[in-house]
Length: 144
Image (cartoon, rainbow, N blue to C red; front, side, top):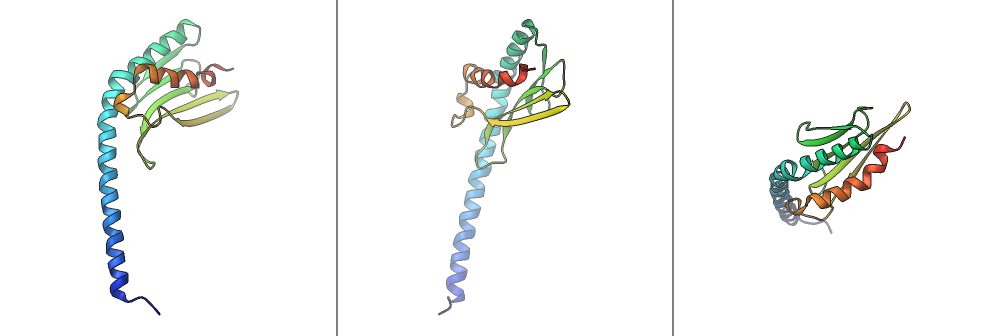
């Protein structure tokens, strides 16, 4: 026996309300993450990447730090296609910090994106936490 239009309509209305509520929650979650990320970028990520770049340069691996858009990027002086970039990704189910790692090997360019400091609120990520994530990715930046 087919469902009555009234039952179908009621279920559609409930589902629409659920979708709208989830969208509003996601917008609030993204807005909160963006606010926390602004502070993180200025107070943690940029100073930490500057210190790592200076340390690498002192060891013979010259890097410079730039702040393109709403991210911070450490780029090799030897190849602009070898870099590590920290940014906020809001495209997934939940906002998260990601590290984009690009490296050039001969004529080939490899790129990798990995979440960093997963399951940690952005506002609680310290320079120590970020440094650990950078050190994990560093082998890819200096291999030749």
